[in-house]
View 1 (spheres, rainbow, N blue to C red):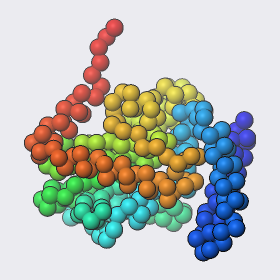
View 2: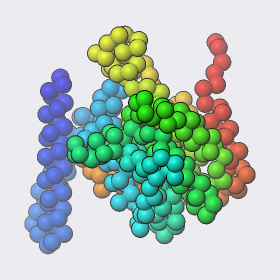
View 3: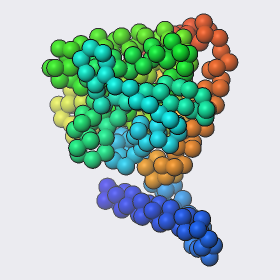
Length: 319
């Protein structure tokens, strides 16, 4: 069964590459290739629907971690213009696991902050596989405060296995940096939109997630702990990670029902990694709509509604 799904994934990737190739040829005037493009699109949609029709929570975890899935830096390059990155926390150093700076979103100045995992081995090591140190969160806080000072909306992108749990990070105040980020985001007097684009792991993800609107891509995951970590604690074996993934309720559908997130952003058929350009367009449209809505709300109401939203998460009644 696993091999069959891998074969489908490979075939989808081949079809996606061929479709993109034909699109470029047709743009250059080779109109006779249009029938071939139409047929390939039909095959792609049929195969993609077959793959996506019954994904388990664990399979969505694999999609969220897909090596070709768009990262924060990809969204910055394709949704925003004139991005200027800021570095350092003014206390210890710079952390490449978090990208933070200012850009323009459809002509409007905004602050952009997000986790970045890196692509090749060298970059993954430089960015610590998207696991921030405390200086990364302090850098994010610095940019947030600047955004508030200059009245610029804040857009965050969440994609991390979790904050780095090393001794050095703890010695430099990892928990305090995350807590401070949560507190400050809860009180910022500007619109905030957070988007879970891949893997949202634990407090390391939540540190960028206290927002007026929390969006989540269809095949992203968001959880207090990874399925492997949960399985190791509960079952003493990571082999039970698929079972843990189901129990954790980490998919966008589950979290929307639980009111942890506000909106699910549909992905192209087969996943964001197969049609990244379409994914950028879909998310850009959703960000535009939500930002327009938030800008109509007064500052005092904005902060009050944000705080009430997060205070209400987790409230339950015994049957």
